[in-house]
Image 1 (cartoon, rainbow, N blue to C red):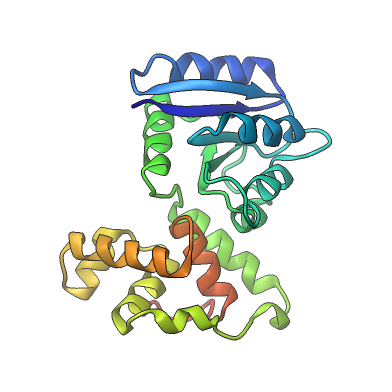
Image 2 (cartoon, rainbow, N blue to C red; image 1 turned 180 degrees about the horizontal axis):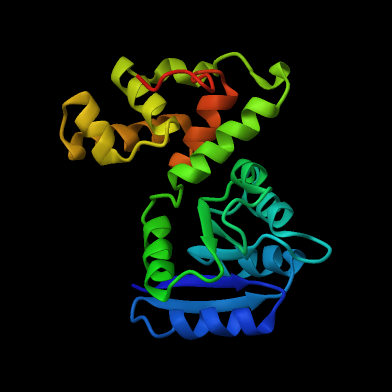
Length: 224
């Protein structure tokens, strides 16, 4: 079963380049293209792609607003990967809050592009430690009132699940969490799946945002 991908970028050459790379894969199909955010939302709703490659900077409706409209309450189940020219884009935090599952640089090697799309489609997230740090730094700059009381739904997590959630928020991989908690990586994957299901989150990117915004994890605190 092939993965349907929608390519969104205001540059035709960029879209053509991504299409050529993706269509060379047996398990991927480019279901459509869009040149701006407004068209992206309409096409995503019409086509129902598994993954949307969404350019951050576009005229009129940018990629972040388009993602917000597409993935808002009652929105589509598709996954959005933001495309950016810069590794530390100033819009990282807002894009993740809008529901994006991660970031890819536009000049990413083809094999990393393919691997990234497959990872996001399978429920993983493209959240490198550098991006995690960026989220934390952005959060630190925000006024204290942005810290909320712990959401009631966190009460449904077990003590171990809360522990795993805190480590996810620190940017640790499943393997690193397993090593720290002295459990198998399979056990960690199970905990992560339960956390996302109980909290109604799309992926671990959203878990990181929730952990900091709710005050479960304090920026600057020791990961241990």
